Structures are given as C-alpha cells and as structure tokens.
Amino acid sequence: MSNSRRLFLKGACIAVVGASGFTLARAKSTSATNVEPACKYALVHDETKCIGCDACSIACREVNQVPEGVDRLEIKREGPFGEYPNQQFHFTRISCQHCDDAPCVKVCPTGAAYKDPKTGIVCVDEWKCVGCQYCIAACPYQVRFINPVTKAADKCDFCKETRLKENSLPACVSACPTKALTFGDITDPQSQVVQVLKSTPSYRSKTDLGTRPKVFRIASQSGEIEL
Amino acid sequence: MSPFHFDSLIWHWPIAIYLFLAGVSAGAICFAVLLKHFKLGTDAYKSGFVQAACLIAPLAVFAGLGILVIDLTKPFDFWKILLFYNPTSVMSVGVGVLMVYQVALFAWLACVFKEPVLNWNQGRWLIVDKLFNAIAKHEASITGFLVILALSLGAYTGFLLSALTTYPMLNNPVLPLLFLVSGLSSGAAGTLLGGVLLNGNPDGKEVHFIHNIEIPMILVEIVLIFTFFAGLILTGGQSQVAALTAIGEGFWGWIFWAGIVVVGLSMPLAFNLFMKASSKRKFSYVAITASCSLIGVLLLRNFILYTGQMTVA
Image (cartoon, rainbow over all chains, first blue to last red; front, top):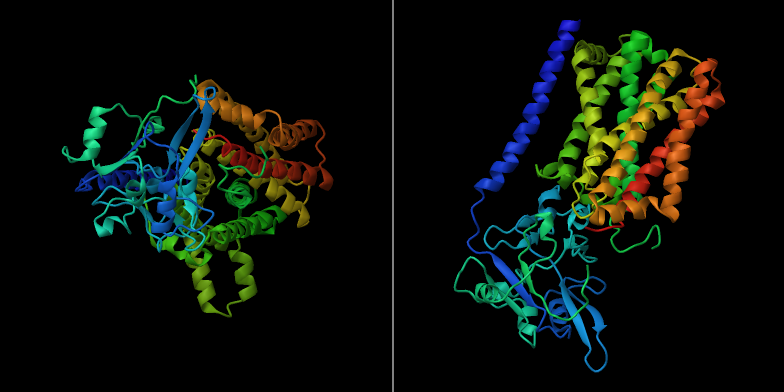
C-alpha cells in the first residue's frame, strides 16, 4: 500500500513538473521563435505642441466609428497652472500604448488579443473575443473597453483596419493642427519618428512594469512639480 | 470613493462569487477525501458529511462556471475559451484545470458511491456495473489526481488575480496561497454545515476530525493575511497606498476588520478553542461556526476583488 502510494506520488510529481515545464518551455519558445516584425509602428506625442483641441479624438471617433460613451483616444487636460495671464494646461494622450510586451496579450484566454506580427500593433480579433474582460483589467494604462456594438474588447489599433489600409497616416496624426503627433516605423533609422526621438528627450508611461510601450511622449514644461 | 463604483473597477461581484464557489468546491472535496481515507473507509457514503461534501463540490463548481459564463459580454461564445488555448494566460490554464478537475471529481464520486449505486441497480444494467467496477479499480490514482487538481483549482483562483500587474495589491505572490487556504477552510465549513443539515451527527468523529484541521488552518490564514498586507506596506509606493486604502477607514475597512477578522477568523477560532475542553458538540454550535467561516471567506473574496482594483500601479 505505502509502496504504491509512494509510486503514485512520484508519478504525479513528475507529471505536474513535466506539464508545467512543457507549458513554460512552449510559452518561451513561441515568443522566442516569433519572427521579428517587418516593422514596428510607434507614435510620439509632443506635449509641448499639443493645445488640447480634441481634433485627434474627434477624427478617431469618426474614422473608426467608435460608439458614443467609449473612447479609443482621449486627451486628459490638467490645469490651469500659473497665474493669469500666464496660465498653462498640461495635456496627456490616453490611448493604447502598443506595448512590445503587452499584458493584455499575455492574459487573453483565447488569443483574441494579439500582436500583429507584421507591424507590432496590438490588435483584437473581434470574433475570438468572448468578453471575459481579463485584458481590460490587465492593461495598466486602462485604455481597453467593451465595444457596446460588437460586445468585444476594443481599443486604438493605430487605424490598422481603416487609414493604414489606405496607405495613409492614422486619423489622429492627420487631424492634428499643430503637428504634435509623429507616427512611423522605429526599426527604420530614416523614419521621422526615429529622427524626432533622437533629437528630443522623451519619456514613456509606466515603463517600470516591463511593458515596453511604443507611445513616446515629449514632456512639456507646464504642470506642477510633483514628488 | 464609492465602495462599489469607481473608474478602475473592471471585475464585479460575480467574479468574487465564482472565486468563492471554486474554492468551496476544491475545499469540500479535499475534506471528503480526507474523511474517507483517514476515518470512514468504504462506509464513507453513509456519512452525512461526506454526502454533503460530495453534493457541494459538483454543485459549487457548476454554479461558479455558470456565473462566469453569464458574466461574459458574449455568453454564447463561451465555447471559444475551450477551443482556443493560450499557455501564457492564467485563465486559459485554469479553465483546463477546471475541466480535468470535473472529470476526476465525478470519477471519484463513482468510487465513493459504488456500493449504493450497484445495490440499487441490482444488476439490471450490466453497463453500469461494468463502468463502476472499471472506475473503482483505479481509485487510488483517481484520488491522488483529484487532490492535486483540487489544490491547483484553489490556488488558481488566486493566480487569476495575481497575474494582473495593473493592480499592485492583487499582483502579490501571497494571494494564491491565501486564496488556497481560505478556500480549503470554506470547503471544511461547507462540509460541516451541509453535513449537519443532512442529519449528520454534530458530535460525530467527522466533526472532531475536521475541527482538528480547522484550527491550524485558521492560524495559517491569519499569518497569510498579515504577510499579505505587511508585504504590501513594506513595498511602499502604490502597493502601500493600496494596502492602506483597503484596510483603512470606510466601507471596506469595516468589512475587513469586522467581517473578515472578527466574524470570519476570530470567532470560529475562539469557538474551536473553547470547544476543545468540553467535548459534546451541538447542531447549533457546528452550524454557527461553519456559517461564520463561510461568511468570512465570501467577504474576503469580495474585499480583495474590490479593494484590489481601487489602486492602480
């Protein structure tokens, strides 16, 4: 009796270790053998040029037919800072950061959240999505939402299905009257994004979480000094 | 901040109920296995407590899965979770564990209730005899795998939340252990409550056996809750903010101190210690202790889920 129990325990332990090891190894190998994308799209939001006019978010809603009540792109306004007449506002872009190591892609149980192998854009497969909202909870930038029409998770996809298909820039980039947005391929050293990023210091949000976001920001001097 | 409505809240109470039910199921079946293995043997099916555990385990897991499916925004597409698999997703792995767990659960139930079923059948359907005998042959392996799967299920309820880097309070290595232990103790409480309701003897050897395991388990739970919050506070930054918002003033602070610490942990512990000396246990005593424990665990699930989502990294 005790012999067979020992045998069983050994067997079970080997099975558990084997199964979890296999899963881990497979997870590693799939991410390692993934072909590096042909290009990696990134966006720069120059907060020094942004005037908070919301032209970008209005264009986004129109082009991507985003239903009322939800947003793929929002401009958060903070301020005013300073005394009249030298008052300033600070504008922050709130949209998908297209993380290179995206938490939403990791947690999605069906693979509906995925990183497009060609462009590095984080996308949603509407059909595969079951609406468990795990990705919405997992996104540290809190930019995902349930589309009230499709009932699937939704968010900014750099206009992959709309403007990029027509070989034009994302709607927000084209709409910006102050040219505060720069879009392009960061693997191409000649691209405008790379030029902008090399010439100006930029920052990214919540990099300490290891998400490696592909939305860069150029900090404006307005705003409060926070400790 | 309103306790039930705030911007960063994504998962609502149905998820907490689901986590609670999965834990109860895993815990109840673990105690049924322990009772059969160490106390009752082949007579296990006659005990009200084993019967209760064997009813609770499948019903809780079905109810939990039902709640989970209804809570999806596309409930009729739930089969896609079973069809598509993502090895990096805790939810995907957990669904796999749940499916295998249910198979092992029913196989084990067949082993336990083989005798009464075969007596009732009286050889009318040969296939039933054959099936039950074939399953019972592998009882030892089935039992072992069931326990491993039940423990995995209990821990999974914690890993599901601790995988969320968004929320520093949930992204905590102690959480899976805490949910596993509290899940087991809720399973014990469910077994006791169901057992006495099914006319089990409140002073029987089953109750003494379970109560003996319950005291150390409550102590471990207290240590885990302490480690959970001490760890968060010592980490500093948003983790500290999250911990202090959770157990500080306000609605959820009351739930934590009065509901979880006093009703859920201290009262069952006090009852158990008090009852050690005088041995005779009554129906009301067993039922009240078990109810306190169950309420405590249900509140703990809701408390962790809601307060965990209050603070973002």
